[in-house]
Length: 213
Ligand SMILES: Nc1ncnc2c1ncn2[C@@H]1O[C@H](COP(=O)(O)OP(=O)(O)OP(=O)(O)O)[C@@H](O)[C@H]1O
Ligand SMILES: [Mg+2]
Image 1 (cartoon, rainbow, N blue to C red):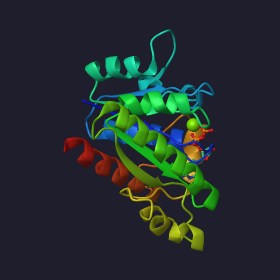
Image 2: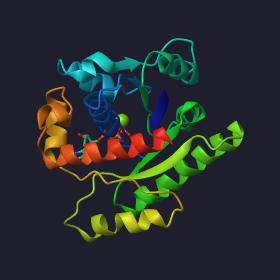
Image 3: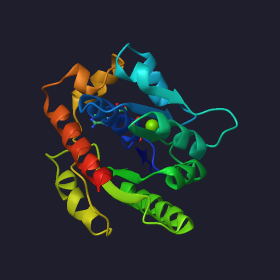
Image 4: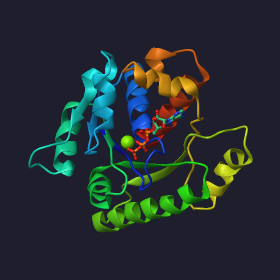
């Protein structure tokens, strides 16, 4: 039904975390999900193999001669939602993802350096849109690892709004998010009633509304 890619040049801004937890939220909404791990570091696969949860069933490695684009399109035929986790600092992979995706999610952390990197991811997504001569991929920004107790964290959303793209609900920096990974689980499985869970659910609902348009 739809392909959603998560991308950004900067490492460690929460791309894989968002992919894994969105997979869980779409599963909870009754959708079938495939999460493609297009990162040679294979963080998503490593997370999935840590346990025996949802990710162990839905994460697939991108490999072989087929391009990421064709693997994503194939996966789309057999499932409701295809999520693509892309690596940092490999613009050619992120670009392939942008050529396939209906929606690009660009997470951004609170540091000013994160905002610089975001501009590159945004430019790359717009280039793919121009090549496709299409409104796709749609592009949304996601405030990620936000510390709401800090000024930088609180001002992130308004900084992002100046970039000219819509901003989705934020994901806070929270201990349970990392703890879930240690057990190979998503937040929905590890801490289903936590504030972190509420945030991923809100993000998934916002993504779902965009995909239904
Ligand atoms: N919302 C969050 N709260 C707490 N910890 C988080 C959160 N998001 C990510 N992390 C932690 O931050 C680290 C980096 O996150 P993640 O691997 O998702 O980033 P990434 O952008 O995929 O990194 P890379 O660019 O290396 O692939 C991980 O240890 C992860 O557990
Ligand atoms: Mg990652």
